[in-house]
Length: 495
Ligand SMILES: NC(=O)c1ccc[n+]([C@@H]2O[C@H](COP(=O)([O-])OP(=O)(O)OC[C@H]3O[C@@H](n4cnc5c(N)ncnc54)[C@H](O)[C@@H]3O)[C@@H](O)[C@H]2O)c1
Ligand SMILES: O=C(O)C[C@H](O)C(=O)O
Ligand SMILES: [Mg+2]
Image (cartoon, rainbow, N blue to C red; front, top):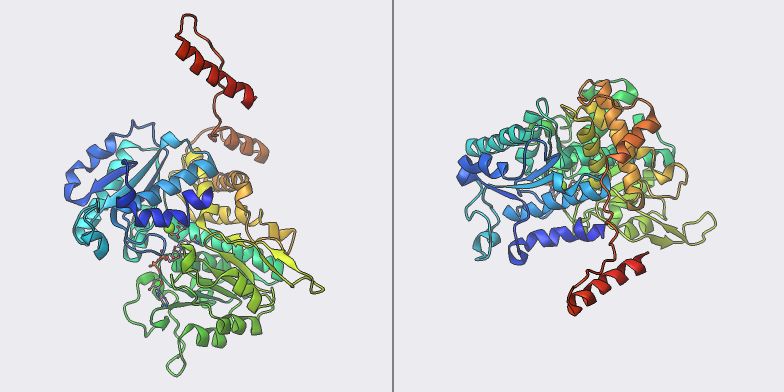
């Protein structure tokens, strides 16, 4: 059911939110009613009641853009995953949408649209609104971890950078995506017997996720090679609408500038194909929302200089992927090491050692592999902050569970069948890192790894129903006794 309660089906539900609405299932905060934010948030429990908050402003949902107040469903979907994958109790979470208006014209024209019917508020009023939300949430629920989801590019990083040094918070599109993609790349490098230090990566789509991935990979190269961040960034090329980002490119954000190429490209073409031919990357990542952007020509160009090209089309939902696994594998004779943002069926082809047909399972490289474990570790250790070391530890936790480590034809990342084990491993690593960084605040966390795993598991909530008991009340009406017998028979069948 994961692809129904989460990506890709949730995208469709979000787009139709106001039309399929039945009842409110989260906190709707309204920028025009900023004085009510504290009160509205306070209705959801006492200081002890909330462990995990997911908040969105609905501006950049998946790759489907501004969805206004329908964004509440992304907060809900991510929290469903916190429960399914990480065992956070479903009553101890809070989905929030910050309704700041919408720039989506079709929503504004839709008579059934439920959100604020005005263009997005930006600038100081927006910042004040976000600040009021964060401060109120911290005051009311001081133990809660705050997960930011699907904010627009101009706000996502800014908000994260503002709050990260002060509170336990996390941006899934920047950090979760960076962590899971680095884990997939590490597994792929293992299979192809290449070194992280030699990596050359092109990222197509230099937005929130693209730059988040670049940062995580850059820091890993820096640590591996013992070089500066600036030096490590030279192994990464970012491409956006104007083509390759260079120091000549106008209107770059501060985070994009770190990757702007300083060498002279004035006499070279800067489109994806030309850049791939020129820089000969071994890793190609897609976070552009441009379907089919990884053409046969581009993929063949990758394969012409790289024995096992690592190709990760990550744009969600499914229809926005830069390429589909069947094409990537066909164009590279089964050589490409592929993982995708949404789930795909396994691909069959004549790529065995002797030309026999093999079936390749393609891993889903979605931040859902990692954010539940990071959140679980943060919640259980009541970490004051989410530090870089905790994120690096999470990458290690996922990478070491990659099926491709023991079977080179296996998927690059662990699948949904072992999702709870992955969360326990990631949480263990995150908690250990939090203790090393001195940010864990809970006393008595076990030091021994298997004790720590046990400690984590026993605090995870399981959806187990209480057994029904067969009762027949004396004096009950014939009809009631009949109904009770039906209940009783369910219990006997269940046993
Ligand atoms: N698999 C995952 O875990 C995961 C995580 C986060 C985001 N994503 C996906 O990545 C995509 C991007 O998300 P985001 O939050 O970074 O959005 P974003 O809007 O911040 O970034 C998208 C970037 O692509 C650029 N772009 C658009 N058209 C382009 C073109 N023709 N050529 C080059 N660049 C182009 C945009 O200018 C923008 O900078 C979405 O589809 C989202 O679903 C996947
Ligand atoms: O929500 C997802 O499926 C992953 C990611 O956060 C995205 O924005 O695409
Ligand atoms: Mg997202």
